[in-house]
Length: 130
Image (cartoon, rainbow, N blue to C red; front, side, top):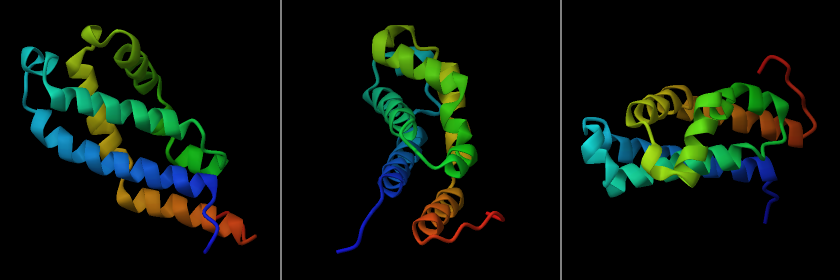
């Protein structure tokens, strides 16, 4: 049994949420505000964004935090707060823009690169070129 660090676990969770978010977004991207208001896929999209934001806050590695800084943006933070506390006030245009931004910037390659940073650090090898 091998050790899986907290940051590795968090990256795994982020990756799973990103995969779910991409799948959900296909079904909601062309819906208008009225269609999204009571749509369970829209609710699932907001839950994925909330979950991604919440787990990302616990990343300890600064390099990984910098690489995935889109996940701590002001827009995501505000959207998460609205989703968690006043769901009916969600601006769906902004929600879809945030979703697209996450999906475009947090790619499989970027997550793999972040995992390499964490594994290198765990092995005591710090590669400043990453």
